[in-house]
Length: 481
Image: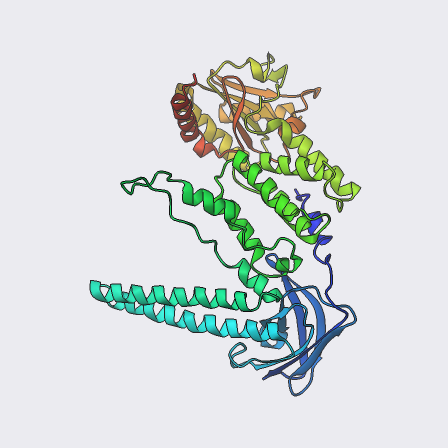
């Protein structure tokens, strides 16, 4: 299924304010001749070409245009050099020249007419120098690993290199605050986290203080009013890291932090707002982590369907609404929609909510599905060996309408035993299970508790027993029956 959020990015990539009239960037690369070069820029984790220029016999080319380029870290791509590229800064200065050669694009670079690109190149050289020192010290540390005094000395020298790097960056930011490059550099600086509070005896009194401080101040060095940060390889990585590594991986925490971050970017109809909202909507819709679809629904309702996003056209909004409507009924924690009067393989009828069990495993399958042919018999084996003794029953829903094929599958796999219900919605479909449970592929597995509340969804069959054990232990600790 095509994810609906992909539609957003096509309409936001090239939106943004300009800073001046026209650009002219002269490039000379010794070792490249009689070919073409491309000028592009980063955008999130992708790169986009915005201009092409012919290269003469001496390696000269010029990128120019009547309208100013939008701020960002741009790339000069050399197809004749296996698509190798080097980076330049495009800020307020948009008429400048750079010269370098293929032997070492960074070290041999010369810049004229752009303070920002001079600073950027100085930074690249300094980082290369410090990286070389760091690697040499790490090699020495490995070599002298059996000598504690040497290792301590090397660790002290590594710390000194790290301090030098940090101070170099802070000084460059401090001395060039007026530049776009300073904003880019600042976005890479980690926040300083204070020491945790301690009592009179020196014992830490709040073990979560540093994590909470780091989470709260994680974006302090990001200027959310600067759309140009989106055209760097930095911003999206920081955004992803925050939600992957910093925030507690629970839907409730993710909803709170998503709202907070989107609110930081909410500057009317800005590109930053468009990107952050769209990226997080897509991030949670496509996440493989169980329960994160709840965050997708929350962002859709809070920011899109509420009318705050002006860029979504009627087609996109209709598709988004359809996705929300399909996902909402089967969010973890909700009571599973009942499937009433489903016909069993023996001609009797059964409803989902009529199943009396500590846990009900609800499965949607079809016999022609390759995964179903393997996983349904595997589930049956686990049910007989383990799950049935754990208070589990199975409600296996056939999703198609060829009764003979369904019955043949049941008989062939011998899927008949107490506590295992083979049901279908035919021959006169009435249960609306596809919409209630967002069934667009098979197999799909849900776990329901005794109250028919959804406690897991789209879970792998091999993980079912472990999950049920975990959920039982969780309920015991919470004092729930």
